[in-house]
Image 1 (tube, rainbow, N blue to C red):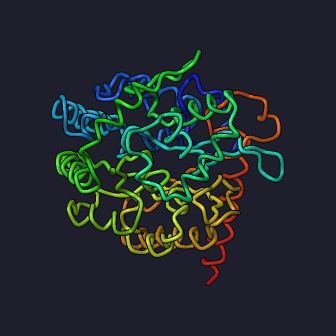
Image 2: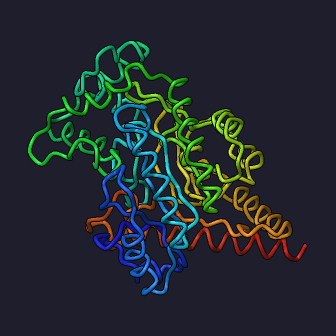
Amino acid sequence: MRWYGPSDPVKLLDIKQAGAKGIVTALHHIPNGEIWTISEINKRKKIIEESGLIWSVVESLPIHEDIKTRTGEFQIIINNYKQSIINLSKCGIHIVCYNFMPVLDWTRTSLNFEVEDGSTALAFNLSELMAFDLFILKRPNASQEYSQTQIDKATETFKKMSQDDIRRLVITIIAGLPGSEEGYPIPKEGFDLTRFQSFLDKYAQIGKSEMRTHLVQFLEEIIPTAEEQNVLMCIHPDDPPFSILGLPRVVGTEKDFEYIFNKVSSINNGITFCTGSLGVRADNDLLKIFDRFSGRVHFLHLRSTKSDDEGNFYEANHLEGDVDMFEIIKKIVLEQQRRFQDDRTDFAIPMRPDHGHQMLDDINKDCNPGYSGIGRLRGLAELRGLEMGIYKSLIKK
């Protein structure tokens, strides 16, 4: 399970009782671009191991915005990144998840969307995002990126919003800034989006082609270090996997992965296979993508989403929604068996239940969005049970 460190409301003992064996975490207190020192890594590792768990995956070793835009001191920051990879390896941690999303990390418009059973989930509503873009942020030329039908829907949505609704939406979207280390601080009293717009402006001349090139240039520098240190780098798909607020997003489809791996072919250049992020695009065939790049899947995020025809989605229960979790886990089990037979040391692919509903006693508790204890416990239990059933049925054959 993912753990946000000592300040996480979900404690290591909670995670252990949920049935997890490993921890996915990061040194969130270290500003983006600075080196993760051996002493800081070992300090976190010791806390985890004293709880009877292991630190199995880093999520994330964040990419500074200067690297994505190739501006400022990006070369120094890349060198720092390589040193962090070296230090992680020296501490016995060999899987690093990261993403290349500009400005915003994951993006949602609601952190407490109520589903049928009364629990709450993360959700994305395109009309609300467009209302933010057109009428709250008022991004220059934003209207050129939407159809008239979409603009009309966004207008109606905005007309119905109270000041509290507007403030809540702004804070929710800004929550997607990667820890706000480089970004816009979440406002306590009122909000000024001028600075937020200034971050978007840095990408005014960077389209999908340029963003792809910057990603490949980054990989060409760091993957040789990862190879030397026996570290598996696994890029997380964009979430959601399409452009928002005019920002280029380049990791969301089979062709995107094909491009990245054709340019940097090392097996250390791999994927965090996130069924939720990839699954919200109707044109993504998850089973085909897994089959094609299965050897490069170094980390698994298993979750399901429920989408409609208008670009909206919410986080469904792990065995429900649009993702065929049975077929996905069946392929994972077969891939692990293949790796074992091929004497690959990475035959056991680490998995975590990604996101979970806020439910039962957690409904009135503060928690990191999507990372309540009980919702993820339910998800982990469902996924482990499904995996065991599939595994035993295959063994009998």
